[in-house]
Length: 355
Image (cartoon, rainbow, N blue to C red; front, side):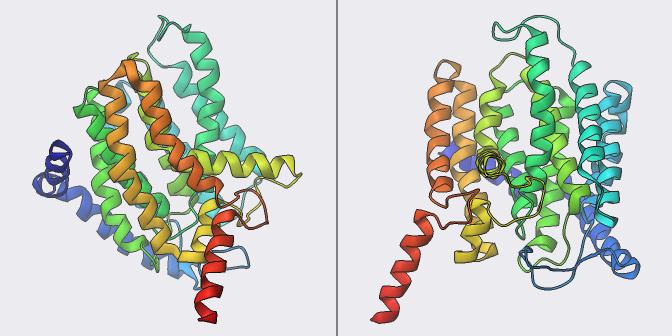
């Protein structure tokens, strides 16, 4: 525990001054984007399925995209598919923010970008005994899915960007624990940590600006691409990714699977995610804060344990993820019906009112 506290102190305090440029650049860009988007009308107007009540500038994710791409321009000479892929998804995301695009073109773009990233992964030998062709065959649809997972979960003030902040911190902690990554991969995680720290100030409830699809799809792509590259080192990176990202992939997977089985259009906006239902009871900031703090205090240390004890990684992963699964299932995601958690809280409030 003391080791983790020292790590947090280092990242939040000691290293902050050395990375203040990323924090400041994001804050300045966001202020500029807010003014531009208000003037051109790029504003998210609330509707019956929205989680906000006031018109709010969108497209703030452009700040994250611009800083990450600019800071890592040298990566173009070694892994151009990362920068080009991220830029393509950002452009499509911005177009979708301005005027909603059909689902098929977006999916095809994501498929093309993900395929390029996966096919060009520098690996030939089996990883953990699995042929590389089989791993790549699974990674391509998994990448498309995760990009959309991140986009689906961008539904509460502070949630998606706060999760990116906590996840970046978690991967940096795992790297200190022995997770093998390329040097530029670690740089991106570090940059994201300080960039999203600034973004969170503007996006915390009540949000002054939203990321939009330009930000959520870009973040989903970045986390997937970096996770795929770390997996190639054969150091059980899959476990750290599954643990750290568990809130998002579990909620989205259960919700969309159940909606698909019920015959609902899975890409149509709705309010049936567990986080939607939780926010109706507790409010935006409480739900976002809970998910962020559980990720920092529980999932990140468990992810590092899985990296350090590869012999116990499957068991550690189950121990880390099962409580998250239970909490999410209690809200009955993917169904219009209330979950057990909502019924219990509602009964409690009724009893208090009677007293």
